[in-house]
Image (cartoon, rainbow, N blue to C red; front, side, top):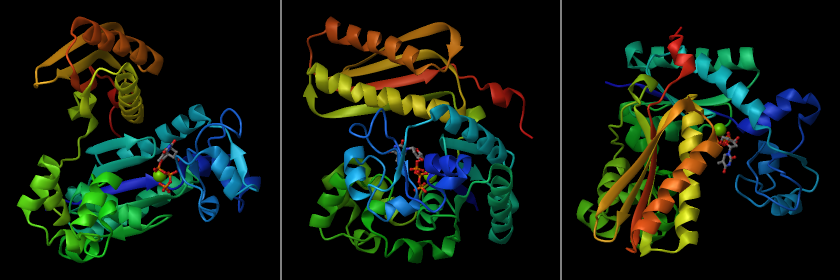
Length: 351
Ligand code: TTP
Ligand code: MG
Protein backbone atom coordinates (compact mmCIF):
# COMPACT_ATOMS: atom_id res chain seq x y z
CA UNK A 1 0.00 0.00 0.00
CA UNK A 2 1.40 3.38 -1.02
CA UNK A 3 0.69 6.67 0.73
CA UNK A 4 1.50 9.71 -1.40
CA UNK A 5 1.51 13.32 -0.24
CA UNK A 6 1.11 16.27 -2.56
CA UNK A 7 1.89 19.77 -1.32
CA UNK A 8 1.29 23.03 -3.15
CA UNK A 9 1.84 26.50 -1.72
CA UNK A 10 -1.20 28.79 -1.78
CA UNK A 11 -1.12 31.73 -4.26
CA UNK A 12 2.63 31.40 -4.05
CA UNK A 13 4.17 34.52 -5.62
CA UNK A 14 1.43 36.76 -4.19
CA UNK A 15 1.63 35.19 -0.75
CA UNK A 16 5.38 35.80 -0.61
CA UNK A 17 4.72 39.43 -1.54
CA UNK A 18 2.13 39.70 1.24
CA UNK A 19 4.59 38.29 3.72
CA UNK A 20 7.22 40.83 2.71
CA UNK A 21 4.71 43.71 2.76
CA UNK A 22 2.24 43.26 5.63
CA UNK A 23 0.36 46.38 4.48
CA UNK A 24 -0.94 44.32 1.50
CA UNK A 25 -2.86 41.97 3.86
CA UNK A 26 -6.59 42.00 3.20
CA UNK A 27 -6.20 43.70 -0.18
CA UNK A 28 -6.34 42.20 -3.67
CA UNK A 29 -2.80 41.48 -4.90
CA UNK A 30 -1.85 40.68 -8.48
CA UNK A 31 1.68 39.62 -9.48
CA UNK A 32 2.84 39.98 -13.06
CA UNK A 33 2.65 43.66 -13.91
CA UNK A 34 5.69 43.59 -16.08
CA UNK A 35 6.99 45.91 -17.27
CA UNK A 36 3.89 48.06 -17.02
CA UNK A 37 0.18 47.63 -16.55
CA UNK A 38 -0.62 47.61 -20.24
CA UNK A 39 1.43 44.52 -21.06
CA UNK A 40 2.01 40.98 -19.91
CA UNK A 41 -0.12 38.40 -18.15
CA UNK A 42 -0.98 37.62 -14.55
CA UNK A 43 1.45 35.20 -12.89
CA UNK A 44 -0.85 34.74 -9.94
CA UNK A 45 -3.26 36.63 -7.72
CA UNK A 46 -4.21 36.27 -4.09
CA UNK A 47 -7.60 34.79 -3.23
CA UNK A 48 -9.16 38.21 -2.66
CA UNK A 49 -8.25 39.26 -6.23
CA UNK A 50 -9.53 35.89 -7.51
CA UNK A 51 -13.00 36.85 -6.23
CA UNK A 52 -12.99 39.52 -8.94
CA UNK A 53 -12.23 36.92 -11.60
CA UNK A 54 -8.49 37.54 -11.77
CA UNK A 55 -6.41 34.39 -12.41
CA UNK A 56 -3.06 33.18 -13.77
CA UNK A 57 -2.43 33.81 -17.49
CA UNK A 58 -5.09 36.53 -17.72
CA UNK A 59 -3.80 39.64 -19.55
CA UNK A 60 -2.83 42.28 -17.01
CA UNK A 61 -4.97 44.83 -18.82
CA UNK A 62 -8.00 42.61 -18.22
CA UNK A 63 -7.07 42.11 -14.56
CA UNK A 64 -6.89 45.86 -14.22
CA UNK A 65 -10.38 46.22 -15.65
CA UNK A 66 -11.76 43.55 -13.33
CA UNK A 67 -10.06 44.86 -10.22
CA UNK A 68 -8.62 48.37 -10.63
CA UNK A 69 -8.13 48.69 -6.86
CA UNK A 70 -5.70 45.76 -6.68
CA UNK A 71 -2.03 46.11 -5.86
CA UNK A 72 -0.16 45.24 -9.07
CA UNK A 73 3.38 43.99 -8.59
CA UNK A 74 6.22 42.98 -10.91
CA UNK A 75 7.60 39.44 -10.71
CA UNK A 76 10.48 39.18 -8.25
CA UNK A 77 11.74 35.75 -9.28
CA UNK A 78 14.95 35.92 -7.26
CA UNK A 79 12.89 36.30 -4.09
CA UNK A 80 10.46 33.47 -4.94
CA UNK A 81 13.32 31.15 -5.85
CA UNK A 82 15.01 31.83 -2.52
CA UNK A 83 11.80 31.15 -0.60
CA UNK A 84 11.17 28.04 -2.69
CA UNK A 85 14.60 26.65 -1.80
CA UNK A 86 13.82 27.04 1.91
CA UNK A 87 10.45 25.37 1.53
CA UNK A 88 11.79 22.50 -0.55
CA UNK A 89 14.49 21.86 2.06
CA UNK A 90 11.75 21.53 4.71
CA UNK A 91 9.62 19.27 2.50
CA UNK A 92 12.56 17.06 1.59
CA UNK A 93 13.39 16.51 5.23
CA UNK A 94 10.09 14.59 5.63
CA UNK A 95 10.93 11.81 3.17
CA UNK A 96 13.92 10.79 1.10
CA UNK A 97 11.49 10.11 -1.73
CA UNK A 98 10.65 13.64 -2.80
CA UNK A 99 9.86 14.98 -6.25
CA UNK A 100 9.70 18.76 -6.71
CA UNK A 101 7.38 19.64 -9.59
CA UNK A 102 7.84 23.40 -9.65
CA UNK A 103 8.85 26.22 -7.34
CA UNK A 104 5.86 25.63 -5.08
CA UNK A 105 4.76 22.04 -5.57
CA UNK A 106 6.11 18.62 -4.61
CA UNK A 107 5.22 14.97 -4.06
CA UNK A 108 6.46 12.86 -1.17
CA UNK A 109 6.18 9.11 -0.89
CA UNK A 110 5.38 8.60 2.78
CA UNK A 111 4.37 4.94 2.61
CA UNK A 112 6.79 4.35 5.48
CA UNK A 113 4.26 5.91 7.88
CA UNK A 114 2.23 2.70 7.45
CA UNK A 115 -1.22 4.24 8.03
CA UNK A 116 -3.27 7.19 6.88
CA UNK A 117 -3.68 8.24 10.48
CA UNK A 118 0.06 8.61 10.91
CA UNK A 119 0.39 10.12 7.44
CA UNK A 120 -2.11 12.82 8.45
CA UNK A 121 -0.06 13.66 11.52
CA UNK A 122 3.03 14.00 9.34
CA UNK A 123 1.15 16.22 6.89
CA UNK A 124 -0.06 18.51 9.70
CA UNK A 125 3.47 18.75 11.03
CA UNK A 126 4.82 19.64 7.60
CA UNK A 127 2.21 22.37 7.09
CA UNK A 128 2.95 23.76 10.53
CA UNK A 129 6.68 23.76 10.05
CA UNK A 130 6.36 25.74 6.81
CA UNK A 131 4.02 28.19 8.52
CA UNK A 132 6.27 28.61 11.55
CA UNK A 133 9.52 28.95 9.67
CA UNK A 134 8.45 30.66 6.44
CA UNK A 135 5.17 32.28 7.52
CA UNK A 136 3.42 30.83 4.48
CA UNK A 137 0.42 28.53 4.07
CA UNK A 138 0.31 25.45 1.89
CA UNK A 139 -2.35 22.92 0.97
CA UNK A 140 -1.70 19.20 1.32
CA UNK A 141 -3.44 16.21 -0.24
CA UNK A 142 -2.94 12.58 0.77
CA UNK A 143 -3.91 9.59 -1.31
CA UNK A 144 -2.93 6.17 -2.64
CA UNK A 145 -1.21 7.66 -5.70
CA UNK A 146 0.10 10.92 -7.16
CA UNK A 147 -3.03 11.70 -9.12
CA UNK A 148 -5.41 11.38 -6.18
CA UNK A 149 -3.05 13.21 -3.80
CA UNK A 150 -2.83 16.13 -6.22
CA UNK A 151 -6.55 16.25 -6.85
CA UNK A 152 -7.17 16.10 -3.10
CA UNK A 153 -4.91 19.10 -2.57
CA UNK A 154 -6.53 21.04 -5.43
CA UNK A 155 -9.95 20.59 -3.92
CA UNK A 156 -8.81 21.62 -0.41
CA UNK A 157 -7.26 24.98 -1.37
CA UNK A 158 -6.32 27.27 0.29
CA UNK A 159 -4.65 26.31 3.59
CA UNK A 160 -6.27 22.88 3.53
CA UNK A 161 -5.49 19.26 4.23
CA UNK A 162 -7.53 16.51 2.60
CA UNK A 163 -6.98 12.79 3.06
CA UNK A 164 -8.50 10.46 0.47
CA UNK A 165 -8.05 6.88 1.58
CA UNK A 166 -8.10 4.14 -1.08
CA UNK A 167 -11.67 3.07 -0.30
CA UNK A 168 -12.83 6.71 -0.54
CA UNK A 169 -11.21 7.37 -3.90
CA UNK A 170 -14.16 6.45 -6.14
CA UNK A 171 -16.62 8.56 -4.18
CA UNK A 172 -14.16 11.46 -4.14
CA UNK A 173 -13.63 11.36 -7.91
CA UNK A 174 -17.20 10.64 -9.05
CA UNK A 175 -18.78 14.13 -8.86
CA UNK A 176 -15.71 16.05 -10.09
CA UNK A 177 -15.67 17.70 -13.50
CA UNK A 178 -13.59 15.81 -16.09
CA UNK A 179 -11.26 18.80 -16.44
CA UNK A 180 -10.07 18.17 -12.88
CA UNK A 181 -8.35 15.02 -14.15
CA UNK A 182 -4.71 15.54 -15.06
CA UNK A 183 -4.31 15.28 -18.81
CA UNK A 184 -7.80 16.59 -19.61
CA UNK A 185 -7.46 20.05 -21.12
CA UNK A 186 -10.19 22.06 -22.81
CA UNK A 187 -9.78 20.24 -26.16
CA UNK A 188 -10.05 16.74 -24.72
CA UNK A 189 -12.87 17.89 -22.46
CA UNK A 190 -14.85 19.14 -25.43
CA UNK A 191 -14.67 15.71 -27.10
CA UNK A 192 -15.63 13.95 -23.88
CA UNK A 193 -18.54 16.27 -23.22
CA UNK A 194 -19.85 15.59 -26.74
CA UNK A 195 -19.77 11.90 -25.84
CA UNK A 196 -21.90 12.69 -22.77
CA UNK A 197 -19.21 12.74 -20.08
CA UNK A 198 -19.09 15.88 -17.94
CA UNK A 199 -18.19 14.30 -14.62
CA UNK A 200 -15.71 11.56 -13.81
CA UNK A 201 -18.63 9.30 -12.93
CA UNK A 202 -20.02 9.80 -16.43
CA UNK A 203 -16.58 9.30 -17.93
CA UNK A 204 -16.50 5.84 -16.35
CA UNK A 205 -19.47 4.78 -18.47
CA UNK A 206 -17.43 5.18 -21.69
CA UNK A 207 -15.80 1.89 -22.77
CA UNK A 208 -12.01 1.74 -23.05
CA UNK A 209 -12.29 1.15 -26.78
CA UNK A 210 -14.36 4.30 -27.26
CA UNK A 211 -11.80 6.38 -25.39
CA UNK A 212 -8.98 4.79 -27.37
CA UNK A 213 -10.55 5.59 -30.71
CA UNK A 214 -11.37 9.11 -29.53
CA UNK A 215 -8.03 9.99 -27.96
CA UNK A 216 -5.51 7.31 -28.94
CA UNK A 217 -3.09 6.09 -26.31
CA UNK A 218 -4.12 8.89 -23.94
CA UNK A 219 -7.62 7.39 -24.00
CA UNK A 220 -6.35 4.20 -22.38
CA UNK A 221 -4.66 6.18 -19.65
CA UNK A 222 -7.78 8.24 -19.10
CA UNK A 223 -9.83 5.07 -18.67
CA UNK A 224 -7.55 4.14 -15.79
CA UNK A 225 -7.40 7.62 -14.28
CA UNK A 226 -11.20 7.82 -14.16
CA UNK A 227 -10.99 4.69 -11.99
CA UNK A 228 -8.41 6.22 -9.67
CA UNK A 229 -5.56 4.15 -11.06
CA UNK A 230 -2.13 5.76 -11.35
CA UNK A 231 1.10 3.83 -10.86
CA UNK A 232 3.53 6.71 -11.45
CA UNK A 233 6.28 6.49 -8.86
CA UNK A 234 7.50 9.52 -6.93
CA UNK A 235 10.73 10.24 -8.79
CA UNK A 236 13.13 11.30 -6.12
CA UNK A 237 15.95 13.47 -7.30
CA UNK A 238 18.65 10.83 -7.00
CA UNK A 239 16.73 8.81 -9.57
CA UNK A 240 16.17 11.62 -12.02
CA UNK A 241 18.74 11.24 -14.74
CA UNK A 242 17.32 13.69 -17.19
CA UNK A 243 14.47 16.13 -17.64
CA UNK A 244 12.77 16.56 -20.96
CA UNK A 245 9.65 17.66 -22.77
CA UNK A 246 8.24 17.04 -26.23
CA UNK A 247 5.77 18.68 -28.52
CA UNK A 248 3.85 16.96 -31.30
CA UNK A 249 2.41 19.27 -33.93
CA UNK A 250 -1.22 18.86 -34.84
CA UNK A 251 -0.15 18.94 -38.48
CA UNK A 252 3.38 18.28 -39.74
CA UNK A 253 5.01 21.62 -40.34
CA UNK A 254 7.99 23.60 -41.53
CA UNK A 255 6.69 26.95 -40.34
CA UNK A 256 9.53 28.55 -38.39
CA UNK A 257 7.02 30.46 -36.28
CA UNK A 258 5.14 27.35 -35.22
CA UNK A 259 8.33 25.36 -34.62
CA UNK A 260 10.19 28.00 -32.65
CA UNK A 261 7.03 29.03 -30.83
CA UNK A 262 6.54 25.49 -29.57
CA UNK A 263 10.25 25.20 -28.82
CA UNK A 264 10.17 28.29 -26.61
CA UNK A 265 7.48 26.52 -24.58
CA UNK A 266 9.69 23.45 -24.21
CA UNK A 267 12.67 25.54 -23.13
CA UNK A 268 10.59 27.31 -20.51
CA UNK A 269 9.02 24.07 -19.29
CA UNK A 270 12.32 22.20 -19.03
CA UNK A 271 13.99 25.13 -17.31
CA UNK A 272 11.15 25.52 -14.82
CA UNK A 273 11.43 21.87 -13.83
CA UNK A 274 15.22 21.99 -13.63
CA UNK A 275 15.08 25.13 -11.50
CA UNK A 276 12.34 23.64 -9.33
CA UNK A 277 14.67 20.75 -8.46
CA UNK A 278 17.59 23.12 -7.94
CA UNK A 279 19.48 21.19 -10.62
CA UNK A 280 22.17 22.26 -12.98
CA UNK A 281 22.77 20.45 -16.29
CA UNK A 282 25.59 19.83 -18.70
CA UNK A 283 24.09 18.03 -21.67
CA UNK A 284 21.38 19.44 -23.91
CA UNK A 285 19.66 17.13 -26.38
CA UNK A 286 17.21 18.11 -29.09
CA UNK A 287 15.05 15.52 -30.78
CA UNK A 288 13.33 15.92 -34.08
CA UNK A 289 10.85 13.54 -35.67
CA UNK A 290 10.11 14.04 -39.32
CA UNK A 291 7.05 13.00 -41.23
CA UNK A 292 7.01 9.21 -41.29
CA UNK A 293 8.46 8.74 -37.78
CA UNK A 294 12.11 9.04 -38.75
CA UNK A 295 13.67 10.44 -35.55
CA UNK A 296 17.07 12.05 -34.97
CA UNK A 297 18.80 13.62 -32.00
CA UNK A 298 21.56 16.17 -31.68
CA UNK A 299 23.29 16.98 -28.43
CA UNK A 300 25.89 19.21 -26.91
CA UNK A 301 27.75 18.79 -23.63
CA UNK A 302 28.94 21.97 -21.92
CA UNK A 303 32.31 22.25 -20.21
CA UNK A 304 30.70 23.25 -16.91
CA UNK A 305 27.25 22.51 -15.47
CA UNK A 306 24.88 25.48 -15.65
CA UNK A 307 21.39 26.56 -14.56
CA UNK A 308 21.29 29.45 -16.98
CA UNK A 309 18.12 29.58 -19.09
CA UNK A 310 19.64 31.90 -21.68
CA UNK A 311 22.48 29.41 -22.20
CA UNK A 312 19.93 26.60 -22.56
CA UNK A 313 17.95 28.68 -25.02
CA UNK A 314 20.96 29.62 -27.13
CA UNK A 315 22.43 26.12 -27.39
CA UNK A 316 19.11 24.37 -27.89
CA UNK A 317 18.03 26.74 -30.65
CA UNK A 318 21.33 26.20 -32.46
CA UNK A 319 20.71 22.45 -32.44
CA UNK A 320 17.13 22.87 -33.64
CA UNK A 321 18.20 25.19 -36.43
CA UNK A 322 20.62 22.55 -37.69
CA UNK A 323 17.71 20.10 -38.03
CA UNK A 324 15.69 22.58 -40.01
CA UNK A 325 18.57 23.43 -42.32
CA UNK A 326 19.74 19.88 -42.90
CA UNK A 327 16.51 18.44 -44.17
CA UNK A 328 13.60 19.80 -46.18
CA UNK A 329 11.22 17.28 -44.59
CA UNK A 330 8.11 18.22 -42.67
CA UNK A 331 8.50 18.08 -38.90
CA UNK A 332 6.14 16.10 -36.73
CA UNK A 333 7.63 16.36 -33.24
CA UNK A 334 10.33 18.27 -31.43
CA UNK A 335 11.80 17.46 -28.02
CA UNK A 336 14.24 18.99 -25.59
CA UNK A 337 16.06 17.17 -22.81
CA UNK A 338 18.78 18.13 -20.37
CA UNK A 339 20.91 15.55 -18.60
CA UNK A 340 24.13 15.10 -16.65
CA UNK A 341 22.20 16.72 -13.82
CA UNK A 342 23.80 17.84 -10.62
CA UNK A 343 22.16 19.14 -7.47
CA UNK A 344 24.43 21.14 -5.18
CA UNK A 345 21.93 20.96 -2.30
CA UNK A 346 21.48 17.21 -2.47
CA UNK A 347 25.19 16.61 -2.39
CA UNK A 348 25.02 17.81 1.19
CA UNK A 349 22.67 14.97 1.98
CA UNK A 350 19.19 14.67 3.33
CA UNK A 351 18.57 15.76 6.87
P1 TTP B 1 0.28 27.51 -8.85
O1 TTP B 1 0.60 26.60 -7.71
O2 TTP B 1 -0.42 26.93 -10.03
O3 TTP B 1 -0.65 28.71 -8.35
P2 TTP B 1 -0.57 29.53 -7.00
O4 TTP B 1 0.42 28.95 -6.03
O5 TTP B 1 -0.35 30.96 -7.33
O6 TTP B 1 -2.05 29.41 -6.44
P3 TTP B 1 -2.75 28.11 -5.83
O7 TTP B 1 -1.76 27.00 -5.84
O8 TTP B 1 -3.15 28.50 -4.44
O9 TTP B 1 -3.93 27.86 -6.70
O10 TTP B 1 1.59 28.19 -9.39
C1 TTP B 1 2.67 28.54 -8.54
C2 TTP B 1 3.31 29.82 -8.99
O11 TTP B 1 3.75 29.71 -10.34
C3 TTP B 1 2.36 31.01 -8.96
O12 TTP B 1 2.31 31.62 -7.69
C4 TTP B 1 2.93 31.90 -10.02
C5 TTP B 1 3.56 30.95 -11.01
N1 TTP B 1 2.68 30.80 -12.19
C6 TTP B 1 2.89 31.63 -13.28
O13 TTP B 1 3.80 32.46 -13.29
N2 TTP B 1 2.05 31.51 -14.36
C7 TTP B 1 1.00 30.62 -14.40
O14 TTP B 1 0.26 30.55 -15.39
C8 TTP B 1 0.81 29.76 -13.26
C9 TTP B 1 -0.32 28.76 -13.24
C10 TTP B 1 1.68 29.89 -12.19
MG1 MG C 1 0.46 26.91 -5.67
